Amino acid sequence: MKVIVVGAGVVGTMHAWQAVERGHEVVHIEREAEARGASLRNFGQIWVSGRAGGEELETALRARELWEGIGARVPALGFRAIGSLTPVRGELERAVAEAAVARPDAAARGYKLLTPAEARAVNPALRGTFDAALWCERDAAVEPRTAQLALREALLATGRYTFLPNREVREVVGENAVRDDHGDTHTGDAVVLCTGAWLSGLVREVAGAIPVRRVRLQMMQTDPLGEPLTTSVADADSFRYYPAYASKALDALNAGQAQDPTAAAHRMQLLMVQRVDGGLTIGDTHEYEHPFAFDTLEDPYEHLTRVVESLLGRPLPRVRRRWAGVYAQCTDTTRVVHRQRVRDGVWLVTGPGGRGMTCSPAIAETTANELGW
Image (cartoon, rainbow, N blue to C red):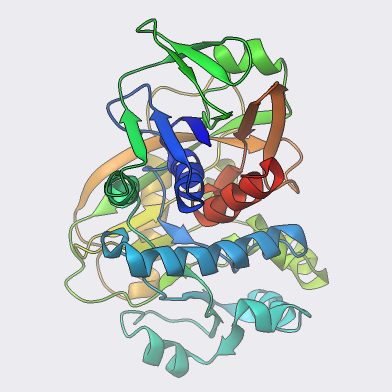
């Protein structure tokens, strides 16, 4: 079988990976020299802890398993089974963590509530003041800026993979075929459009209005911390954002403890991961209203700096990069992904939202199974 994959972000790359793994030939088309969207502009977290139960959690756990297996074969992915800690302060935040530990699926996530001393034994860099910390053993990380490059090198080595950069697919022609802006037609046994947040142009033409929206975020990266940050770190605002933490305790937190005004205005949470070079990737904000701003705002970065410094108990290293990114999210946020047959032999896969980096291996596996690859 020959599979045409359009879009070289992490979702598209994982579809290429699944096809090659199953013995098929892949032609992979990317409109840039390499992917430059949300697949690079993220934390690199394999984030199981906050996922809703049911299909979302099952997908995340399967993806976590697949990431670990791929990471063992492609060391340049930088896969690290580091887990995560969410420090909490006060009874209201602690109660949400306790409710999470009491969930029926807590063991599958690897939840445990740690004392400050136990948390610092896991991550000594957390020298700030807090009352307890929610540990999630199943969380992990990869290197987002290099993951697609590493996977592509492994795919090229199979001899069944062709990468065509700097080609924008303009139209679907007939069955199982697309034409790019060089005038070349690419025909296979299946075409998968993994176009990420690019929802206009070709996607609108072949799929019409789809139940997917675009979301913008701001993030930053620092100079090396100078010591290991041995886990991912979140703050209690992540409880307000991720569906796994829905509970009466969360209702009480929302009613009894207002979010910082800057965090509330920008729909913020803290997530933080250390990169292989020692720097910290820190975010993020969420913007839903179009048109998006073209510039980044400083207030969210100042808020994140305050939160991080309060947890680390030390000044943040110099910020060396700030960026904004846009990803595609299903408007029904309980859906893991939007998967649609748009023509005979042509499928559109988009809209995983903030789950893209986490869930992409399992999303691609499901596509391959449903299409009978």
